Length: 95
Image (tube, rainbow, N blue to C red):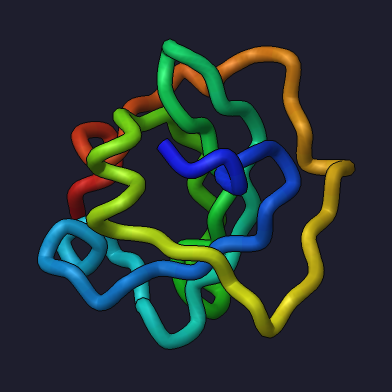
């Protein structure tokens, strides 16, 4: 896992089949990493414009396949969370 993958990192969705199956629009979906440790990566992510937010934990491989750093927006450490979210991505978000 990249050392740059840390809480507060601004992220965006990649155009993948998994993201599409979860109702995530890769053009508009934006979010932040909230927690990173051996338990996974937790993210807070806008599903798509006006479709709500996802609060989920995922394996690092799932993160790497479906998300990337958003260099157009600044990082925001305020999204740091002491605990992982309970829901799993993508299993709990398929539409």
